Image (cartoon, rainbow, N blue to C red):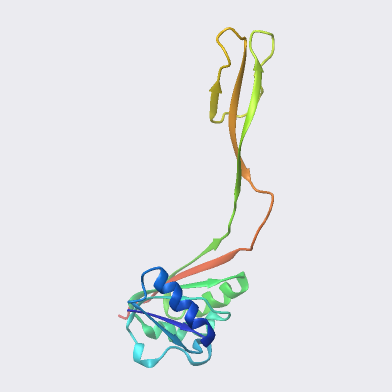
Length: 175
């Protein structure tokens, strides 16, 4: 069983629709709760294998989340800025281990085909480009000129969106 809490009641229909569309509505319960202000409900104590937080101030609920997790449970938190990550990691150090943060950055690539002409037998030399995958297309066996295509990929110059960070941690096992 999974539980999804949302701060805004008007967001619940959209969440339910998303869970139905993805086929998990039978195992996800949706509810309204101010997790940052009130923490997680006591009746869920020790029931979660894993938790995912997407909150403006996740460090405020980390102690409550630790109580909800089973021993050795995993917590993941999404934060859009590194300052949130730093504060969350400080709070995680009390009850969690194996704390790791990964940057999530969308980087698109432009992939295109470029035609290269190289004169063979006429004193011309092939262009001095680094080796890459080429598709050879010979236009006839009698021609001394060959045309090849090079597939080139490079990062797009356009930066769309922004970065984000996923922080993972494992609840320390009690001795």
